[in-house]
Image (cartoon, rainbow, N blue to C red):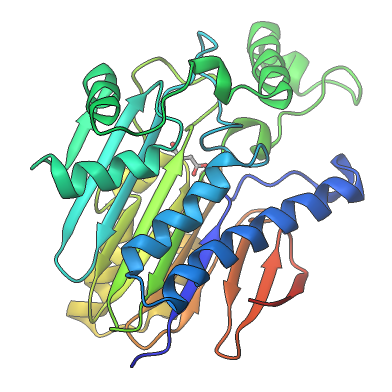
Length: 326
Ligand code: ASP
C-alpha cells in the first residue's frame, strides 16, 4: 500500500490580512481543514484519488470564502459562469465543464462528464442539461452570489469607468482593487493507496469577465493535469497566461522529458514563466513519490495539505497553521 497524499488550494487571489476580521480568517482556515478531512476520509476508506479530489473540492465550492460554486465571481453582466475539470492520472481520463450556470457543484459535473459522457469537455447550457439529466443538484444562478462578490464587481466597474488616473489617485480617492476582488479558484491533488494520482480545479473565473470567457481551469493541460508516475497539478491565476503556457502539462513535461524534480518544474512555472505580468499565479502539485509543492507569487494563497503523520496544515498567507489530526 502507498501512503495517501492530499493537498488543496483556495486560489492565489488572497486578501491582505488586515482586510478581514480575525474570525473570518479562522473560518477560511476551518473550511480548508474541513475540505482536507473530506478528501482524507475518502482516501482512508480506500477510495480513489479521483473520488478524494472531488470530495475535497465539493467542500470548497460550498464555502462562500472561495471563488468557486457558492461565492463565485460574476461576469460583467452580473451572472455566474462556472468552470471545472477533473483528471485521473491512472487512465488519463478527464472531464470538464465550462460556462455552466446551474450546477451546484461543477466538479461533480466534471466527474460525470469523465465517466458517463464519452467527451472530455461540455460547455454552457448543454453541460447544465447533461448534469441535470445525470441527477446532479441544480440551483438558480443567484445561489452562487455572495455580497462580497457583488461589491467587488461594483468596485471594479466603478474603477474602470473612472479611468486609470482616478484609480492611481490619492489614497482614499478609490479603494485599490485587490487580487481577491478580481479572481480565485479552488483545486486539489491526491495520491491514493494504490499510488494513483488525480487533480481537479473549479472556479468562477475573473470578476467582471466577459460572458462566455473560459479560463484555464476547465482546460486539461492548462489548469489541471495528472499522470501516474509523474505528477498531478491544479493551477490558479490569470487563466489566459496558463493557457498560453499549457502550464499544468508543462510541469509534467519538464519532469518526464527533462528529468526535473517537481519542485524545480513547479517553481519555474510560478516564479519565472508567470512572474512579472501584473497578476498572480500559484498551484498545488504532488509527484509520484508523494512530495507536495504549493508555490505562489502573490501576497498569499489559501492552501492546505496533510503530512505523512496525518497532520493537517492550512495557510492563507506565509504563516502555516497546524489544524490538528485528520
Ligand atoms: N485561473 C482562473 C481563471 O482564469 C482564475 C484564478 O485561478 O484565479 O479563470
